[in-house]
Image 1 (cartoon, helix red, strand yellow):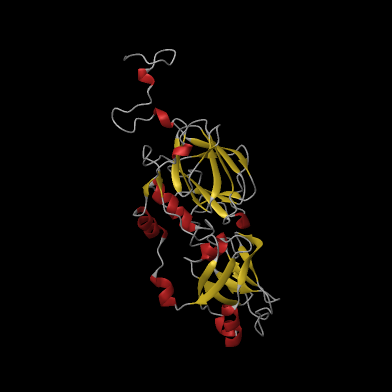
Image 2 (spheres, one colour):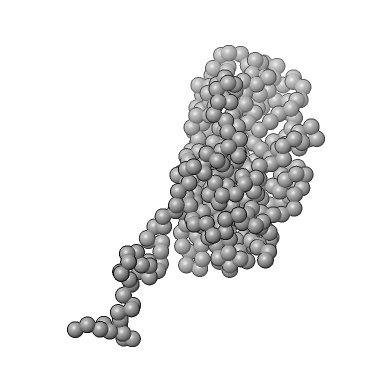
Length: 350
């Protein structure tokens, strides 16, 4: 039987995303993929499936879906308000759950971070385009999800697995971001570079999957001659300095070439902290050597294996179990219905 998830409601910025399309830079296509690949690894660990499975990325919007058959799902990334069923039961974040046929799952912004993720057991099995299933809106591949869309799911490798959870990982409130020197770092005088590294920045409201604008006080960071560069290859994580001296951190759907000078490049493992930071979150940058940057980098597959070792059973909050008294927690202790007559009186005893 084909399993589908139907989109009942989707705000702007809700797309299918996977690990992207590496290898097409020479053809003018940046990698794209999830803004927070760590969230993909978390979902894969919770559902015990490949990190390459496509999921739904929710960029600060509302999403409502309905399943045509029972499906396991996981919620990761920026915490959102999650409710299920007609009674609106609240769900734990960074955990896996089950959606029965005909049930509705509702997600709404939670005020923390920028990108939440809905993972589905087996992964989304929509057709691949240019080697990936994710939408790359800047390149015209795919489109945002909308009401009435239907997503086919692949076979779930563990359809009867119990709900699980992962300890929360705070990468949604900014903090210190590591960067490495790039080919143009030398264009910036040492005094200018030192000022950049000592400046407190904030994530502005201007930001999307192409990049994030940084807010700051004081003079800009444009070097002399910075407007006379030839365009060359750029990659996600590059920190471009525009003509007025404003820094922009490039995201997964950035262009493939650019002529603005780049003061450095954010480490791939730290880039989700920039993209996930909510507007107003404080950011500072620290330059590290390439050897240090590579020391703690994990591929998505290695990250999934590491996270799998941290997964634990999800213990339901008793306040969210409507039929709590129907469970037999200790042998011989029941809800008491077996001892009651038709009118609720004791059926036996003196």
